Length: 293
View (cartoon, rainbow, N blue to C red):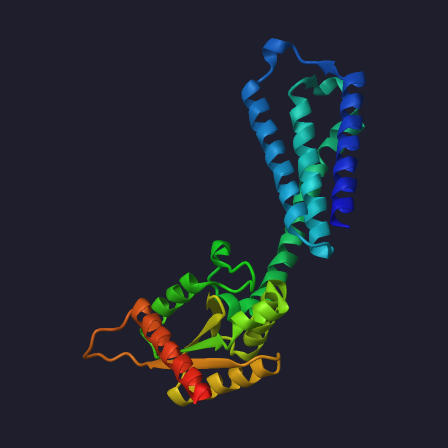
């Protein structure tokens, strides 16, 4: 559907520009070659190319809807205005009919007004999306840090957020899926990836607005809880483990609580992550030992 929409808009723009070009060639008197301002030609041509590139980016990146339509119509109007300004550099305006001079001034302001309306609605849309994604990114957006499978941020992002919150109390919860290797072997890697995606979505919905969940590595997730108590952290870890069992698998958890002290040097993100990793390894070994006994 998106490709069909793209084709229709680009075809319409091409036909309209071709019609205007033919109209100018039939009714306008060409400029004398020596009187053409090539700096203006280069500038207005660059603006037209930029407008067309913006149009292509919007078509590729945006889903269909009212906001996308306003952005497209606004950019089409802007591109049409740039195109007509470019033609002015090659044809004498006085040779064109009066109605054409009036028509020539309309596309750019109408396009920019439409584009402004689309950007304003885009702003409102983005505010809503930010609220939905807060437990996934916490106002820190870097697409290269997003995990390909779960669409959560990876371990680099959690280190960044821990560093930002070291001046206040915080807790970390690490979640490790039990026997995930056996799940991959039994059900296949596609089903394993789907399970990780379902767990990521479930964890995001269970957290507070100020919390953040990331995929740490493999089948391990790590949750940052700013301004939380130790008892709340343990209760949250138990609740997350219980929620994961509803997806048909078991999970282990480890927690650490950090409270900054004025008389001691603050910890750093790497040392905290290393500590909770070691705690998780001990928890896993203890569970394996208890099952063996």
